Image (tube, rainbow, N blue to C red; front, side, top):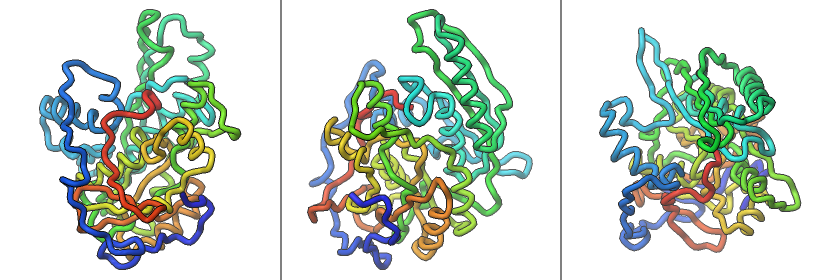
Length: 374
């Protein structure tokens, strides 16, 4: 794993033919991928909410056919809409994180930052949010007040207005303190077209900073674990970072915030949507020492641990240095590093080159290593 203070901006990636120091060899999917089909569940299981293969199956085979429209079919972090001559981004998300408060944040700022970031992944400037609370009977009003204040503070920091909301109360034992839903709208600048489908061979893959911090922060509090150093959630708004990146490269191809399912899932989603192969250099991954130690102790892969203040960008190679410089000049991108590239080989698959000189397929996980982390 790379030291997160690395400032070289490269991982030995050269040319546009798909190499991270050496030429990427074609991978036979029949040899590398798991042949087991997704299981047919007659009921909803926790894995359906984990952001992995089961989540994708639920959305693609149940909800998309039920709603049936081209706008939804893109399955991006936010929908791009045309209205009155303007291009808008629209997104919604629900937050059920447990515990409500954790190192670095709480469910309130998480709900604001998560939706702001989903809008940012289409290049939009977030403008307005709705915020709905579902509160369990018996929850202390002081707790509700803390969460509401966190929503207000986070919205101000992100430059958005909470314009409408709703409150419902459910019987004791039929909730878990507080659930929050936010929806948001933002304006997509003219000429910006950021979609997972636009990633292409030759693109450089950049991660905005250290990964795995949010998931480890949640698990450490939930399970009462200590790892020598407190790991705090990375929850933060990314709209300003994306706008700085667009100044450097208005033709960014694809962005994703690797939340549930982590970086590994985000890379798989973009590879599948674009039909391009992705080569990942595991030695370049910015995994903090404390996160690495926690994952080793818990038997987790940092690639699949959730983040709430990071993004992964697919950038045309000729723009990569300018984008990297712009990211590192912004507080939310100070730890940005190149971690891989897109190639023509193994379309739709993510292949990692390990620190031992080997190669492994980074599959889409079936469910979630850490449930209810957002």
